[in-house]
Length: 420
Image (cartoon, rainbow, N blue to C red):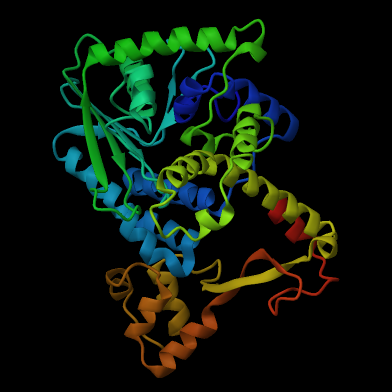
């Protein structure tokens, strides 16, 4: 079993809307392997790991992990992760048992279908279930009252809730054999970082019969797509679902056709870029609407271009591109032998600085910027000397940038970092 199912819950939206997406991504992954994680994806993975530790092992261990992963930004991330922790505690008090990062076999839909839910839970009497999905991104709002971005797309499928969360619910009902006894199903999106007027926790109740309809629909849909004798005859469709598709900008003819059509539109650039009057409002609206539809695909394409640039610069071809590796922002962290408040207290005591470990816990465990506030001038200096300066992640910059590293900069370990 591979790490990710190509028909797992997280890919449900694009698999339903674009039949060819399964085969296009399969071809891409067979040729290039798993895409490298972006900084945002790594950040989300780390936040999920801290959340899992917090729920399973408690706050103290979770905060140690938090500071080890996020360093000087730990306090900001703690605030967001705590939103999900509070959600869990709210339902725990109502008798729910949570199974964080629970893997589900979804063979009732298709033998190759499986996925991992963030925060599934079952009530004590087995009559209520929750599916909590922790979305850590801040750039894309995640709907929970419908899956798609237009009335047309909703009408095509007809499921008024997140299909991703619905699939997790099917997995939970299968595993715990609750189809005939469950009375309430709550699907929840937890998205604390998205800056909007909407609440960070958005719940939607669904009925058992709705999930049975979804299960039957997906079973038929995946059988058609994966069992196609001639996959080339399956339909492509461009839309918001393209944003997370590996095939975007690589082997998608629908995107290429749509882009060619857009480029060939008779629309003077000046009227788009300097839009002021209403003389061409209808034309501008039509053109921009088409451009926005392609934006996820274009963004995905440039993301792949950037990944290729990183590899080329690492291999010494930056000069031809006018690019170089630049020094990232450094951060300070504790050495490996300081992991608990007691470790920190003992290390400071060596230099005659006395601090109570309990005081450290009260100012957000191991956050050195907060610990420094408890110390006098001499104590701050000792604390600073204890910290280890960690170089920031290198990033691509113009070759003439003052932050650019020397052309002869070579570091084998660094090659491993950016290619893994």
